[in-house]
Structure formats: structure tokens, C-alpha cells
Image (cartoon, rainbow, N blue to C red; front, side, top):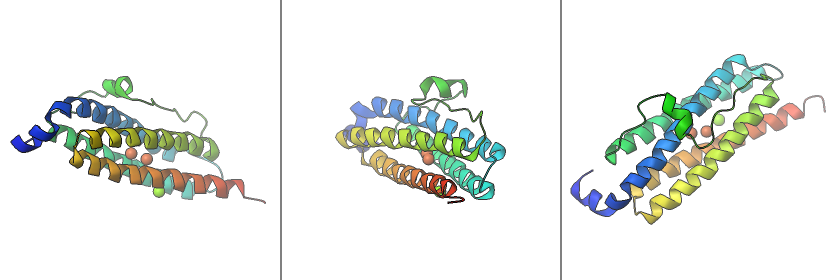
Amino acid sequence: MGVKAREIVGKDADRIVKLLNGALADEWLAYYQYWVGSLVVRGPMRPDVQKELKEHADDEFKHANMLADRIVKLGGTPLLNPSDWLKHSKYGYDEPKDAHVLKILRQNIEGEQCAIEAYSNILKVAMDAKDFSTFNMVRKILDDEIGHEQDLQDLENDIKLIGK
Ligand code: FE
Ligand code: FE
Ligand code: MG
């Protein structure tokens, strides 16, 4: 961070880095949950569900990149070891043991709801810290998570309508 940027955000930078590292852990776990879910999922509308899960996996990967980039710009270090992901994650990992489409969709909808809550909180912290660069990035990620929840809910509703 340059001199002026540090002058404004400086005292809160460590706190924000910590929050962003927590989010980074959640993004990697979300990436893997979607990725492996897209491979094992079975049941009605499988191709549509697979396509959506894969798209979301790609989005979560992009979010991980955005967060890591911002952490570095704030003078922090992104989590260096995958073993830290579960330790720093706020919401953990939901293993898709039951691969039925409705089970996998539900698990990921709940994950998205957690993400929406977490990013809404980080937005408030970034706003209070006058860290508008972090604010803008998190706002973009939050928009994606809101879209993810919607897409999965639409699929869940459509699958429940089959045969009705
Ligand atoms: Fe994400
Ligand atoms: Fe998401
Ligand atoms: Mg989508």
C-alpha cells in the first residue's frame, strides 16, 4: 500500500486482512464443494445442474483470486497452506455424501446464504474503515453470491415441479 492509502486504511488493515483471509478460506472450500459436486451429482436435470455448479466453481475461484490480490495490496499474506482453509473458514465444508441433485443444491444454497451474510458484514467493516477499494471488491463478490443463491433456488424449484 502506498503512503496515502496506508494513512487512510492503515490502522484497520490488519483486521481487514484477517477477515479477507477467512473469506479466502471459504472461497477455496466453496470452489471445491461445487467442483466435486458437479462431478458426482445425479438425478433429474443433471446436465443443467452440472453446468450451474461448474459455473459457480469458476466464480468462487475468481473470488479467491480477488481476495488474495487485495490481501497482498493491504500488505498481508494470503493463507499459505490448504490445511489453514478449514481452520480459518467461517462456515466450513459440507461434504456432498448424498449426491442427489436436491441434496447438493440445498447444501450449496445454504453455503451461499452464509457467504451473503459474511460479505455483508465485511462490507460494513470496510465502509467504517474507509477502505473503499476493499468495499468495491466485496460488493462485486456479494452481487455474485446473491446471483448464485438465486440460480440454485430456481433449479431447486424447477426440479420440485417435475411431474406436477
Ligand atoms: Fe464466492
Ligand atoms: Fe457463490
Ligand atoms: Mg449461476
